[in-house]
Image (cartoon, rainbow over all chains, first blue to last red; front, side):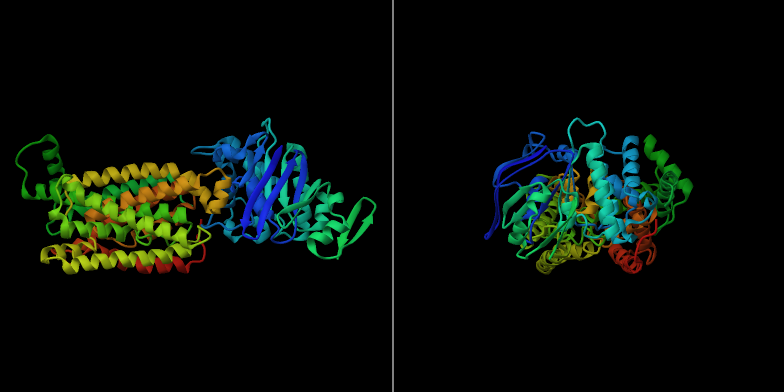
Length: 257
Length: 340
């Protein structure tokens, strides 16, 4: 369980996150949405522990994030950033193994190797293992990064549910891999009882895959709850300043403008 | 990628052979039997050492080992800073460490006689350390003060150019106001010179380099994670501030101790990590160790050549390393990607 209590944080003179209370139970897919500059990325950095809020606290399974060491935090949560570049030519396998950094001191153990392999085959990058990461396409790099962050929280015998955070994970993916990624995440979240929290922009994907959505606007959570309830015509128009057309087709709803 | 065990064995053999060859040839040539004899004489403490025996033990051998240690230190410094700053063209010279150390040492050369001699021969490396510490703090501090994104390497390199020019102008000024013999030692020394080596300063340099190597190897895992950038490394549990502190500390101490005894030797720290990556890919544990050994080999032979080209006189070694290093760097930059 990830909880945010009474978070206040001043981003710049005109924008501040104020009075944010959110609760993220395990086994579900959570999305953070909102227009550009609404404070989504800052909120993600508060959740992952990089930014210390001015007031309030973030807890993972009841433990305050800012009282926990870097390494201990890294064993509980992984974060996929938008940054894909690696500064030196590196083999794909080695990039994925970086995810196991918090678990070994000097040499990766056999378990680390096994987890790496499992994560790589889960995201279909096992055959790229010996390639130079820098020579991959954007989509391949993205999938290798999925394998890396997932291997960081792959643990099969942890009593607590682990946390996977992601800032716009779909940026470099084509449509096939966007849906493929979300199907895989959904499987992982259920299988390993993960807490998955991601910033995304695509309203239709949020409607299809989101168990919960928090909608941000100008530093405030303007709506939160089940995706279908939050992403209604009124909320979308208020946040994005565009009048949407919502079409319901049985179970699925589609937004267009 | 080259097999690790074989590579290490091969390089250790190379080191030993190089030590023998480079210390036997020079202004006078010493035969291998004389080398063996002189070792026996000095180890057993016998009397009757000839001139050749004494040249080998008191001049050639410490000098060859010093060359190896200096090369090792410069390369390790290069490998460490390249990994931490995630940039393949960073080296201690570019970070201001060397020019700061040079300034500290130049201060000692000009005003050293006026200082109390409480620290004996250690006062030179201490002054160099202070200079290098000051310049490094300036580079890193100013980078953080002038950029929003503290990871901006380009900005840091530009600031390093500014800081370098300040300290090097300081060195220039000191050599201008210095009286003749001191000025000569500054100029001579600013191009690198290993001729002042004795066993005492060799011991200090060796200790510092070995301790630095062990400390660096402990940072290898964190440096590996830095390949994804500081933010992602932090997400993987790396304490980036602590890592930065260690990298700079090791770099400052190691580079200034070396610089204070042998002067400024450019390019070594820049090119050897590239060769290490060519041979062994990108695991920092391999790169740190391999750069150190390659640097030792490289500088041993560079020093050897600097003694041989105009023998019995000597060229400053910095001239040689820059002459070799420039074209090699261009060749390396020409290749788009490394081959594993």
